[in-house]
Length: 500
Image (cartoon, rainbow, N blue to C red; front, side, top):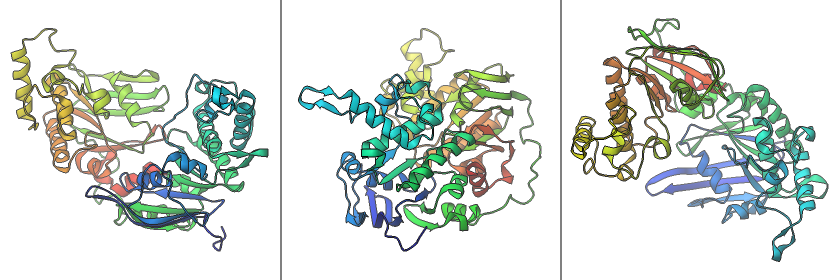
């Protein structure tokens, strides 16, 4: 790309704090027109906050932003869209029962008679047709009258992009009015072939003049498709440049802030698992409805098996299939655990706990609990677990929703421990909790393994996996690699393997 061109987007000295927590510190970057600019960084690096400021969802505390050379500080997402800055979020937002055309114009339906709320259906279809033509090499693959839910995942992603472009405006003749498209992890739920097809269309949009800010963890996507990259670490710019001139190991160094290390000395990739107990769970070529794809693993009593992977790689889906909560398309799961399997959900509030109920009720909630129990025994049992796990609470009758995140997590664990299951499937146990609670939860997991429990641990914190687990396997785009001893991994090597 020609370096002399004026940037479309220029960010200078941007800062943002939430209370005492500084999220962005003196961030500067330049995005050229007709380019794909990758924004990289670990979870919590500040990527989301930066994009939310650009999209009018947050206001910066300091710094300046220029869009097309003019000051830019949108007061709302609607103002950002009018300025030509649009977003395709990571999570799907399509209405599966509506047609492709209805999804594209959802929220911006042209009106024939605005006062009466009468929709101009002909104009709506024309807008949808123009937008789909921009993103689909063969618009017949994405028919306007097809229900969005019947499309493949990659084609649904194209509809998401078409809707974003339509929100920014498509001029007569299919010319783009949108100027900057923010793509948040667009390939996190796509396989390699679908991802390649998606990027073929993203490059076509770039060549048509659109600037793309690509938020991603996949270094392979950056190397193959981005023109420039910027790395954020702890709210600061830690690296930037041409991805074709930067080795993946260099970018990982910039993301982690420490030297890239090879496998630790003394580790044998084919070493036997530390758990000397019998195999309690054996999965062979297990495929879920969407993910994972032909995953195999063996879990022994007394060990912690870590699963590393990026968001969207299929980690939660794997645990839910192993737990029997989600159906599997193929493969076998053999369980040799008389007391069964328990799952600690990553979604504490939505799935793991009844936040409006007491600690005692949450701990007692179990298929193995007696159908009827005297209130006194219920409270006594909960009090025992409150003391056992050092749960900070006013008492067993306190509502779970009134506890801190760390103490809510301990209540989830207390329920599993009360059931005394043989296999624990633990999904993001330290997400959103304080440092002291994290240490307590991880120490408890190690104690449970030492007592003979078998544990599968999913965590986005690579340092936790390296220091807590006996073996670690990497899940990448639904495919699970072979487990290796934790001593043979570093945070950097895990990140490189997961993002390649």
